[in-house]
Image 1 (tube, rainbow over the protein chains, first blue to last red):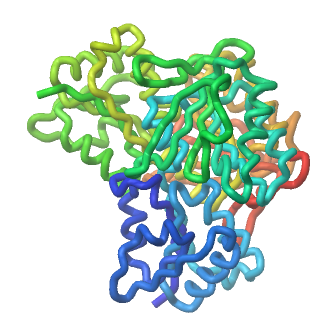
Image 2: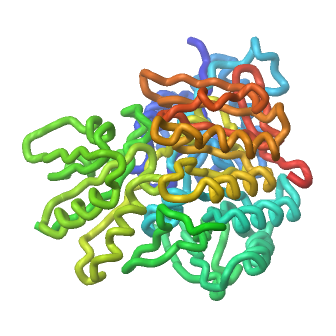
Length: 247
Length: 247
């Protein structure tokens, strides 16, 4: 049997937000690889080997997945959300650089519902106009690059979604982001902390830049920043479809 | 029976990319409203009224959906992709502004797989690092605002996804975007034209900014622009997880 490597996203957490194509790839897999909390979402069954690993091991995990597929296995590499958004797909293609294209296994990427969009849906439509997605982790880029990107996103009038805002290993990422936002945005700018969206642990806090504190975010939080027009209506938050000049 | 308004995304086109929660909302609806080509994806059945409308009528459609839900209907407002990304969710919340919060119907937003991420998955992982989503339609914002946003996205080193790059009514949007990109990005920058992704009409063209022409895009195309590090490996395109300084 020809091996195959499917890179897929399990969505933000709820079973009802996993795409059928992603579920089918999991159901047909002989091997599932991923960060341990995501692999834990896959039920054990005969014929399936689960390979949970730590979250700093993306490239090793990608190489392992490629080798298994080259050996004939039906391999599923799982991420939460969408595999192409700060997740495993880029790591797999990076690992492919070391292999002659003639030896690349069959690969498919199945998209998923990324955390930022799931968080937005729970609040209304805060990303209803042009927006950016920014990973605040400084594992693979400098703090200055992150500041530079947030500054341009703010000057461009974009709404923003911040992934990996803060963790025990990187406690300062979101505090630095708040500094840049306070230099570039008005105090009333809407800020949403969306934690563990669509899971039983979900909590959502809607506040403003003036009241946002860095300890409102943790590693399970996606932070959404409105654009200058983002507003509340009843219990909802949305960004209008139109834009004022200059924003 | 209490009315309910569910705003949902049907994903990019393939049946296997519709979230089960979105499918369930369609299956339980008494009324489905949306732009005609999206409503055409919903099979007719007894007890279901389909309300296809034109694509310039978002706000009227939103008001109609709210009124039906207030009257006790189980209403599904459908978009393609994700309803919160350049789609119906923002229009529904805009329409709610005219109604006292006490009279708002029950509302839920179900996220979906947006076209940009589906397109990325078909090519590899071109949005594997920080990225922006920009609607090139100038129906609701000025051409200068669009230029301003593309310029900041480029200066910030973001990859980009362009929605609604070009249509018969707006033939110049993508040509203007190319002008800004040529002022701000190197000629070798990777540009992807992803048309009708995950449908039988799918076509994907990977080229560079030097070779991109505005007539490569139409109203069914999402255009992805790589960041300065975006590269090819075999038949795939990906953006590395790390960033060089200053980009």
